[in-house]
Image 1 (tube, protein in one colour):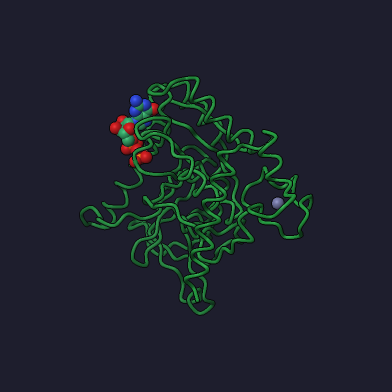
Image 2 (spheres, rainbow, N blue to C red):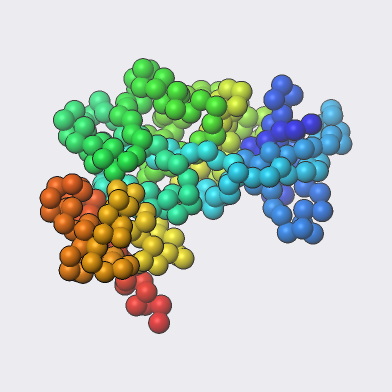
Length: 294
Ligand code: GDP
Ligand code: ZN
């Protein structure tokens, strides 16, 4: 039987098999020997050891399309980055920080701007435009509007999506509206464990419909990946790419160098100034970090 790991707790993996429900699985010692750790999102073959108790062994992990470290999950098709348009007010720097992180992981992003009902419509459009101009797929929504939830659902259809973003922006509200029975799987697992609620939160996959999954990630703050150099940062801003190689200096980081095509484009209004300022602030942060390394 083939299924998908939807959750991992203390050496147990919960595998959802379409049409058959959830099995509590252990990974064969073979994987430990090979140094492979099953991940939430993995597609696995299982062998049932006890049908009545719904216990099984994971005997094979299928090849992964990708492997993310934040969240720790495999086979995620896209990240849904949620930002609130109000309460809390949108913060470009926070959004950009998440975007850099995801760019580094090489994963497609859909930007959801939520709480449209609390925002000024014109300001909301302006904020959105910064990101559509930067090449992102964006959506303005209010989690309380069923039509908006339908639009989000369409984006998720047939894919495995992970929701991320700062706390308070409405991630849980959106996820609950999309998959009201998402907690069903959780209940089933706690019954299986014969234990109370777990205090630590784990990455978890919810089945929305056949082939459509949502990855609920424990809250985390955005950060700039440890292995990132200041020379890498400009490649995380897609809108800068058409100007790459057009600056006077090779390897121009678009800061203080003369005859910089990116700076000129900002002056001409071809590139967003706020995004460029966001870039500069991260560049400074990376320089500071590099200085402190030695
Ligand atoms: P999370 O921390 O990102 O999961 O955010 P929550 O889903 O817990 O939402 C935080 C608060 O914002 C809750 O009180 C929600 O009811 C509220 N909220 C979420 N989405 C919307 C929205 O579109 N409009 C309004 N007015 N409130 C919302
Ligand atoms: Zn430049």
